Length: 111
Length: 112
Image (cartoon, rainbow over all chains, first blue to last red; front, side, top):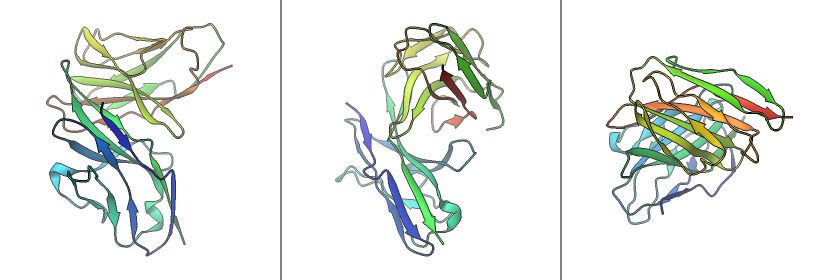
């Protein structure tokens, strides 16, 4: 069965320090992975997706099929990065396509 | 994201009552989804729909029902059969083929 895990519920780093939010998945098909972010009092929104291979707000994520991981990284954390981060896997079934979300990691960037 | 509205923002219900949460979109997206968000559990899929008059159960559909009579609307009814309904409910939409989802602001349901 498809599953997404995020081992850290809470991650605290100091401003300017590197940050890595871990995400692992299990899926028998070809994975499409996403990172969503929810800032305080804002809607859940897409941060980045692996097929785009882009960097958003300084964040990058590389899909490692061998390790079934899609960790989110940023070399220098900023206070405005404090938010809830969700890793998500797009899965298809006989009906259509939906998404499986991880439990989320709350990132706190300290001044 | 401004094209997805959920109402009400806060909802209180007595035990044993059914309640309906509204989700409307003007993005012309075919797919719509309902999730439940609980601390430490992330988002769990309740129901989703790819087309009008059709929908599919998600992982935690028991105690919930939906309808999709119009492309723009996907209301969720939380029935009295739902054992633990107090939660934050999120509606989302997506194009087909699906590349990403867009989320509404959410409804917080509290059962008294």
